[in-house]
Amino acid sequence: MKLKPITPFEPVLAAALPAGPGWIAQIKWDGVRMLCYHDGGETELINRRGNRRTMQYPELAESRSYCRAGSFILDGEVIALSGGKPSFHEVMRRDSLRSEAAVRAALPAVPVLYMVFDMLYCNGEWLLDQPLTRRQQLLGEMLLPHPHVQNVPSYTDPAQLYTAAQTNGLEGIVCKDITSVYAPGGKDKRWQKRKIIADVTAVAGGVTYRDGIVNALLFGLYDDEGKLHYIGHAGAGKMTAADWRRLTELAETLASPLMPFEAPPERSKGARWIKPELVFKIHFLEWNPSGTFRQPVIQARVDLPPSACRLEQRAFL
Image 1 (cartoon, rainbow, N blue to C red):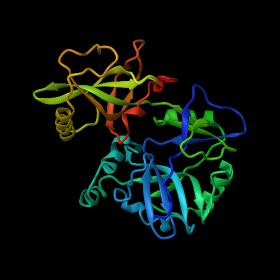
Image 2: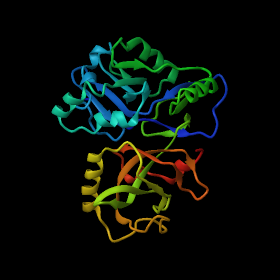
Image 3: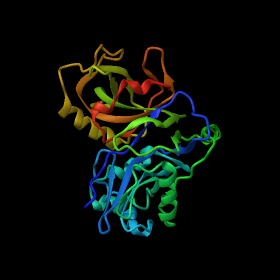
Image 4: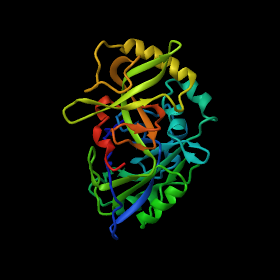
């Protein structure tokens, strides 16, 4: 592929919704961030970490069927539905596959949608310095009708969209400055996300066992000094029996005599420490005054570095 992958621009957490005519709002999809690159010949789907995912989503591999441009870069999110709503657990059933045979078997069981919200490159020209309004205009002109691709709609009233997202039990919304340019690898207040469903990306530093199988994980987040702070344990979630067996195998290979947390966790009796390398996305109800999460539900293991599990995720939730 001739096009060099870029790191996507990210929204920051917001304590309140922005107001004024200079903002649009979009639904925050509970999926996998994905950029689609087409250099005129080859198409690649690449996630935010720069890892190729074209094999996992063959229904999106023929990008000329959903974009009329001769060459392009699209930014969006791949989602899968459960009960009519986006489900991170469901989309990870596809994203985690590592063989073409497994992908073929999963196609009818886990259909996906590519929710496209930005266009960064079109017909040989970079659009990064163009305002969001211009990029969205081009996106609307270039996208073609396709059963697995949708142009994410934008709304001019963030408060109204937030209320609608709450009513429908969606993850949240993202508000964007209509004049904003696109800064690869950037993260600032020109894009702001307001969450409804609290979630956190945390790293496991310990495990507990039942009948020889891991049945819960002890999680932590890093501060600016690289210290890992315990935020709670979780065993409930959407993990299958096979997932827990695999975690048991991984825990054995990552076993460590050293406790990785800055202070002993409240639930340390019977726990075994592991090197903090396994990262998970977790939904929960709220933060307790102690700094631990309440009623956590493990969604899935994610392909992120432990360093991405930052303590500031507790802000505004």
